[in-house]
Length: 313
Image 1 (cartoon, rainbow, N blue to C red):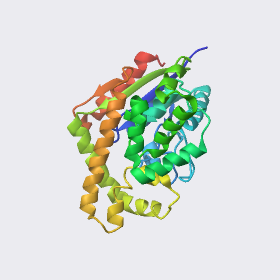
Image 2 (image 1 turned 90 degrees about the horizontal axis):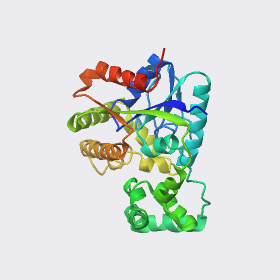
Image 3 (image 1 turned 90 degrees about the vertical axis):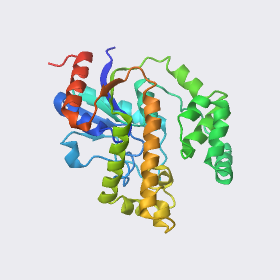
Image 4 (image 1 turned 60 degrees about the horizontal axis):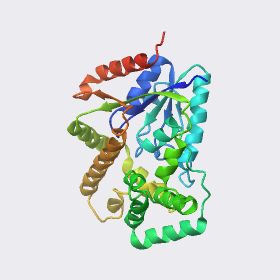
């Protein structure tokens, strides 16, 4: 069985992934499959940097803006939907282009990992939730680090849902997520991936992040955050970078300038974690550039990379 040729444009936030994916889709007749754990939610438009219709340039985008923030959604749920979506795009003679910064989503799909079919334990899950409330999310992450340091290193302490799931899987199966992933990788992947990442110098990337935060605030990020915090049943809002950092300002506890500085700092830290994740994958080709001024060069290098993997007429 021939493998599906899959382009993957990944990397840290504010690195220009979406713009590049759209440009490649226009050149190669492709469609974009979002691999962003926040862009799936309705209403989280500015904070998750969803592309506008103008920015999409008519290119179809999938797995974006379809889920109510009240609904739970696992990595396994994403993988099932993404695989169906990629197969459909391929069946229509189009080029599937996965684009995003959620490394766990990307690797789960590309490597055909299946590890989330372990039965749940509601009693234990509730016990862990109470522990997180009483002792803080960091306590649960430390608990996970003791049994599965690799998975723990890939999760932020605010990602309570996934930390709890990893602990729950270990309780129910006696095996860590890392062990289950390794076993799952024995199943061959149905994809031939061409993976790439725009690799800016660190200071240039951080400068792009700071500019993006300013643009988001100008676009109405405060109003979007204010709306989300009116819903106590939106647990996702508490995790999303761009909301929780602004809450002290909305509550009258800090100035907007202070909260903006914190938001920029936390976004830079998030980008650093993303870089750490992606740099572990030797399959990812790094498209280096000294500045965004060289964008045409970035696109040309990405185009040549695709042609190197698969010749297009």
